Length: 316
Image (cartoon, rainbow, N blue to C red; front, side, top):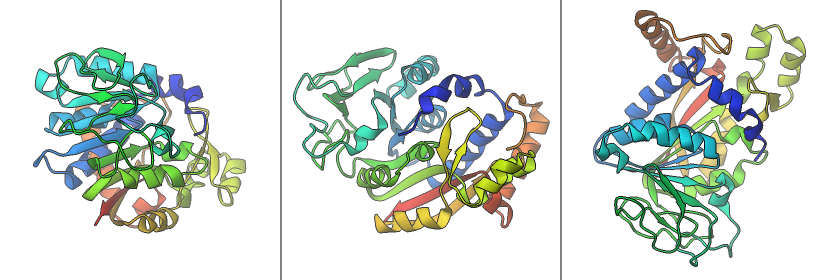
């Protein structure tokens, strides 16, 4: 994984901006279409960050495991979680671990490994601890054992080829704004597919490699615009080198893993080039922006030139 950590302070500083609000609201609408409130699902949010989507799903009744490697972002998630009703807090388990541990090499202890393996910390409510085998955090709900977390149902998720979670552990897997920081996304994609149960939903939010020249072109950065026609790498707006994915390539890669992509959306068609600190406007204006963005994000040709693509992949 490339260096998102270097851009994390800038990312956190911009969370309240219009660009970020549009992204989160659109993705939430799209997820609501694909993941009904009932029955409750087992959800894994890979790279959950401050927990915007994970919390929304927990409020809707789903059992959510949030995985992230950032202490600071998980602390933000914990702070948001602390003011939620107890029923919502009880549905959320947070795991601090490197996302790459999802595809830990064979031979590494999976979830349920020997006591004392502290490859991951489990956070329950406001308490974080490295959890040894069978550890039970505050509140008494079993949240994990050495090396990871137990999904809903308290069943150990060990086995498989290593990593934090066992095969078919989750009904819904989110991976938003993460793939772009992996030079080679194939191992992560394989493990997202591995932990997804039959009939499950994978939600991927990626940088659109088919429209990579749009942002620099519209903002007058002609050197970057020319480069974007031939290169997948780019410097993003938090100052980190990242990578874009072409929809056809990603769809083919997912098909090779047994997942189809029946639905996809464009995200932030109109507001992408706004200043990074543009504030959220009044409610009426914001609603009008969201309605226009929502329609563009599901309408050709607009969605194809969006800076972000939201792919919904299904395991048969």
